[in-house]
Length: 131
Image (cartoon, rainbow, N blue to C red):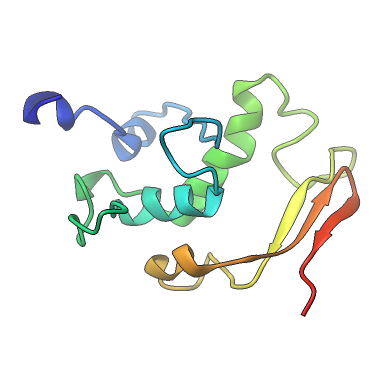
């Protein structure tokens, strides 16, 4: 798309700085479907080809908290469902995962290696890692 337009893509930090709600998802077939990879990309801005070790357009990096919100509460907001999902609250759907690492405290580069230990859908365990 050229260098002039390239800087206008995936402007997550700029959007957030201007109070724009950004909703992340995993339904785009040109990117990995694993949301952990999306979190990794948003906070490190590294590319899967390894060509951008400091991040592609690094000034657009966002925090892990901001990226999680984009995948959860803001994605629910985008689908007009923030009253039933997107956060852990009484009365909302209990859809969540348990991860192998605390992604809020580890080095963001290590998010790529985090695994899902358990998946809970509508309050029921639908996946649990067996050791």
